[in-house]
Length: 230
Image (cartoon, rainbow, N blue to C red; front, side, top):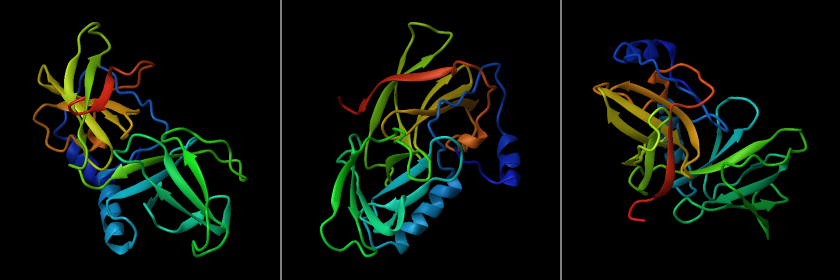
């Protein structure tokens, strides 16, 4: 999951506070930072594909910048640079991605359609690499998601919270004891990172500013991930 530039991060961290609780990453891959989300918006204006949704392809076995393509955009196929592929996101973000594989360089003719489970590492490519694919919306108000927030050392206690779509993913946060405690997920509710900042800290939506120390068990989690109203 990606980080802002070191100089900017040093300034942001000056407003954060420490807590003797853990920050742990249960990620399957890196999330986008605020900078990367801004770059994605710029890419939107240069693309003639669907400007509302994009698909991020992330390496499963190491961190790095996700490779992004807009829904409907004709992009090189990972296993053959002479072939092309288009992706379609499911309605409402929850469900499988559809890929259309073309055995040419202009996405012409009849494609081979495949279904891809989101957030799941696929079998190795011809190059021995594993990827996962995830759909994202560039419109923060396009969907509303809710979940039940838990803290590891407060068993039996939960708090219903609403996710904030920041471009990096969904942030589910709970204000408690002067701290904002948070869980970052993808749009399918898979936990990417957990952490906390001072309750009054402004840029809490940038996960690079979160505080905590590594522990085997993440301090915060969510259950019952759902769309609002369900």
